[in-house]
Every structure is written in C-alpha cells, then in structure tokens.
Length: 156
Image (tube, rainbow, N blue to C red):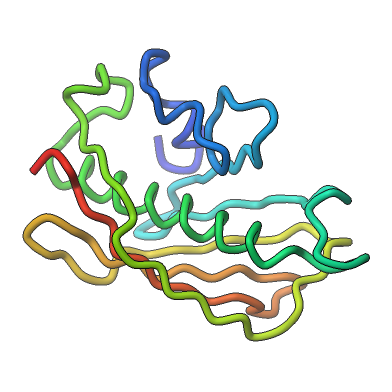
C-alpha cells in the first residue's frame, strides 16, 4: 500500500467521507486531494486551479486551511489503521471516524498558484481519543503554510 495508491481511493465505496469537499474521491466539485503514505508521513501533491485564488497568482487562505485540515485527518486515520491493523477498504462502520477539534494555521508566506504544491504531514502525539498532526504546505521547496491539527476519533 505504501505510496502506491492514494489513501482516499482505498476506501470502501460506501464510506461517506468519499464526498468530503477537500479530499473526497467522489466529490467532483471539491479539491480532490490525494494523499500517499511515505514512511511515517503522508504526502500529497496538488495543483491549484485559477478559481482557488485569493487574488491573482496566490492561493486563498481558506483553501490552504482545507488542504491542511483534510490531509491531517487522513494522517490520523492512517495512523489508527496502522496501529490497529485495519484495512481502509473495510466497511466504514469498522473503521475509525473522526473530526477536527483544533486547527491552528500559520501563514508563513503567500502561496503561489503557478506551481504544484506539496502537502506533508506526520502524527506527532497520541491522546486517549485523538492524534495531533503537524502538517505543512510547500511551494517550490519552501514552506508557505504550517498547521497543527487535533483529530478526535469519534468511535473510541
């Protein structure tokens, strides 16, 4: 599974998260983020479209926040799957399901739109019902947006 297929595409067809605006594989009007396992990180490459701008040439901050939110949630989900030896293709009721309790975003510099963005994340802390994830967006090798999310597992 590592790096071969986007984690969003591994999910059972009946899983409702497939319709998420930011990362849903079945939401054709959404951002359609695709995240791949690379070691202990999740990595996505994403190209903004012109309608994702704040002002010409630069990414809207809300879109950047959605990328970090969704990518962080997938990082927590995959960490739970690894820890409990779960297959993401199982029926949704057998898998962790979560929500974002805290999302802190720091905009380090304007994010250019004329390049592919790289989103990298890692689970950095495990709580009784949550995981804290560190996540950043890079453009041309430079960190532009940094975030930290606390993702709660609603099924624990």
